[in-house]
Length: 545
Image (cartoon, rainbow, N blue to C red; front, side):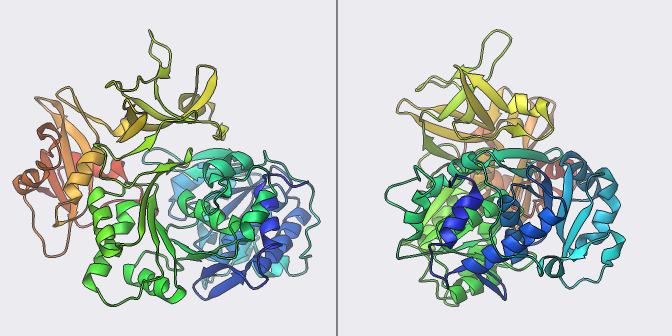
């Protein structure tokens, strides 16, 4: 009997779409649904033969490639738990993850052999290494690794695997903006509905009601070519990969190690991409800069959706995309590794980062104090709380009950996830999202959300990117401080920036200090590195008047 296990759903799609339908394009690598399925079956059989069983954790430590998705599906097929490993992690972060995640196997790029050799002692149960060729020459025997193609070549392409469960897990490690990585434990069914809308994005009937509904959606006589620009080890790209696969659509990945805008638009034109998704302004700005610098270079008439999720997509940048693609839907999705997708907002109609609608499973929770239990914010009031989700949510953080208890709370007998974003509810049930409460700046008793100030700063034509942090102030305790990267050939003073921002934000939110750097610190996914920005500001580096 089929379940909402992602492997069950994927196999039904594979058996439904045309035999020549491509599932994945990544550089020179092109694979149909049937090819991905068959290779995942082979790898699954190999992993089982090596003792990997249901519930075991398998690290995926690679750049974008077809083997990444094959390994993911292989894990799901045998009820193992794939765990993403960030290829940018340095020794300390890798040590923490290898220890915390309880890995028993790791599928990795060959270039990461030296890094694994340094940290493998942190995972005493990690004994199986499967190495994907990437052109590097590191010796596999230094960690006892077996080459990927050789490992699976003698194994069956059949699907003779044990029955699966809705409650099988996927663990998504997220670094967030501070602290060590946290492993978010997602049951398959919860993830299918929370992050993938239950395969309801492309069908008039909405989300699936039973697993077999996925077949109806895969039988549609049209399909879409989607391009996800984040790396697969990031939740935003991984979810897009599953959304595309479970719709029977083609996914195009960026095969390059970094985002070069001209290369992205070359691929979009060549593959006739219909939908492009990226992570906030860190990716969206250079993409738009390339379009403005080369107005007639690419035929992008195939594109009918441009969307962002996982980081701030500023209103000023959204306006540029609307001007460049007047007949294209521009979407700005809210969500996180813990919440999945919580809705989308086009921007421009809210005094915060955007607005979504209150529902039985979407609300604003005011956290408990010594005197008051946790409760929902009052609609139409100025009461601030934390944007929260219920229903299909994770079990918590793997191996971290303390963080789990702080993030997942009970309100009126129902379990809620606190996203960390502060919000309030208007009288019509609209939830306005302002930004991370943990980054909120208290200056003279006024609360300032960095994301709002960053949007105002980014609307200045000289600014390429920025992060805003709190720094000490004798009079107001804290002041708003901007760390910014300018466009080539541009100059900017603090007074010029303040004058520009006055037309976008209140006076008390204006930056009082400006640091101009050559590059803004961000993760490869586009997430902001506020710790880095604060260090720059506190050390007085790159300060301008």
